[in-house]
Image 1: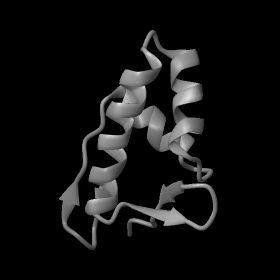
Image 2: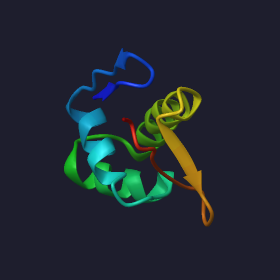
Image 3: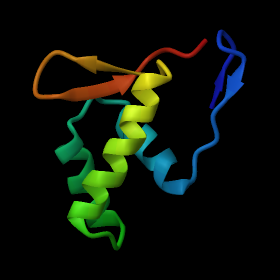
Length: 79
């Protein structure tokens, strides 16, 4: 994914790409991990830990924003 405004390219692996696709609709960490645990052979605790780190990094970079509600996050528009 490319941010023209930031002049940065963000490469995602297949799981990161799946998380990004799921975030088309803002979701909580728990909602994301419910889907990922069903689709991938991953321990729920490990999923929460790794996805939380991924989301925090995306929030720090300004790629995601939080939404009002039960801790939902969604993508910002990267122009």
